[in-house]
Length: 290
Image 1 (tube, helix red, strand yellow):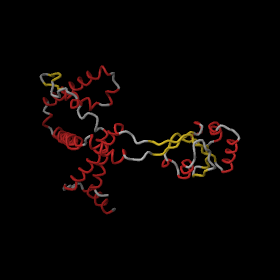
Image 2 (cartoon, rainbow, N blue to C red):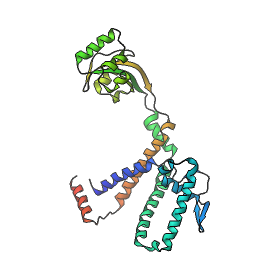
Image 3 (spheres, rainbow, N blue to C red):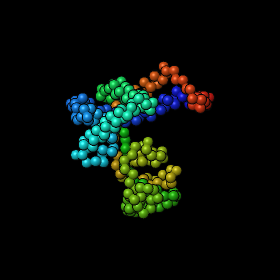
Image 4 (cartoon, rainbow, N blue to C red):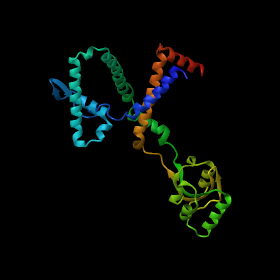
């Protein structure tokens, strides 16, 4: 795998991370009528704006969820106040002229530009209409999928399975017999497997279950897990999910695709020169391994 393909793979991970948060507010002020430039407080004359509070709230994230809702705004404000005090103290100490500050500033500038690019050039281009089109192509027009709800009793041998069938034919209750005899994890639930599609089960089991009628009990069915006795409880057609239920997931998928494509294009047009000898060697080894 080359350095370029590694970078695209890393971008895929980045895309998942960004797309996962793609529909949380980029800054909550953007989704509200509140003015992000509104001054909420001043610290020795330095203004603290609503937009800064929104960004701080996003940064603190899960930590705020542990607090009572009525105290969160105060905590965020105090956080930004302390941030401002420490920043002012750093300037007074001349720390804004240090190499360390400039190093950090450059890195956080890259992050900020990346975030704004993602917001304005990727996320903003993914519309509800695009998601609707994807839904129509992949989901909306799909045929309803057949599903079966069945119980089963799993035993080790065919003879044991035949013995189970004889007991059922003699009037034994399937669910109770499953609790007593089945070695499968569903035994505690009377062998109930819930609803499943054909693709969710191993082939011999699925073929038997989907060939049966409601209430029918199968002959012994062998799979790699053992021998099954199956009873079909219900059958239904599972309709595709509604657009509203999957819209955000579809938009996340589109965002991921756009970001991956944009990163692939950018890397393809870029001249990336690796100066570190060990990293350069890794790149060469990865290329030779292909």
